[in-house]
Image (cartoon, rainbow, N blue to C red; front, side, top):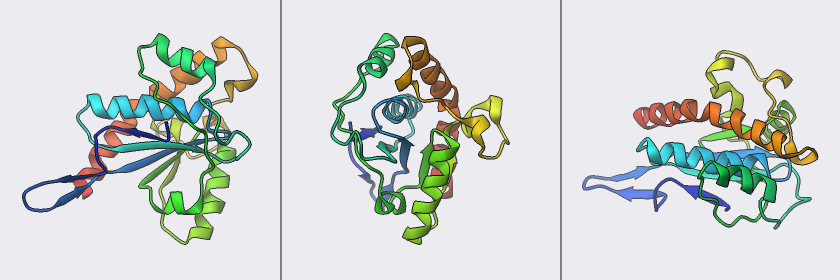
Length: 184
């Protein structure tokens, strides 16, 4: 699942020029629960809104590298009729950040880790927390209050809650991508 692409190609040829698509990366700890759920949810929301974008996911830890999406996360997504592609967890790198237009953190801890990693890359990177895009949290600055808790330690209701919180941000992500395309 390394890539949730809302269109078939990173570049779409037009008569006059090539159009670059916004590249979004969703990040959690191990890249087996929350970030792949975010990738799937945001890719579908963007595709349904007709906003071409590339959506990917990664983790701040390489502990789960190569592992598939957690079965409980897959079940939660499939219960809501999301298509869940194959996935292999991977570690986010400074190079990944430099190549993305928006990087989304699931927790304030991830946000801070990504800021440190971005500082090493030297690139100007927009790093935000997922819940900053949830209308219920609009205008709030990154803090632990915006965390989407790790469901890995919990049970089915914890995965459903994480999915609910991710879905609540989807319309905001679509609006961001539309605005990004207008800034072109």
